[in-house]
Length: 73
Image (cartoon, rainbow, N blue to C red):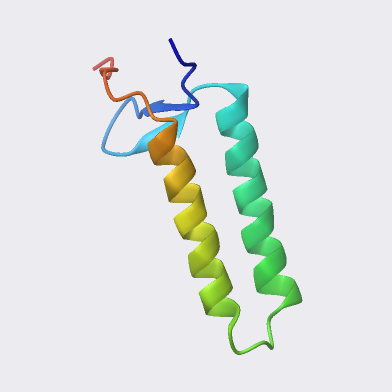
């Protein structure tokens, strides 16, 4: 059985970190977005880099999401 990094949110739609690996990936994503936005502010293709970062984050979430988990509502 694989260890899941992300699971369903307690309320609403989406995923939330379910392990330290999920929190680490989320933290790296936030830092990458902040650094990209601040350091490359004057670069014309910064939006493309940020879209690539978002796509990579979504792929990681999808690959490590627990599809069989249920919310605790």
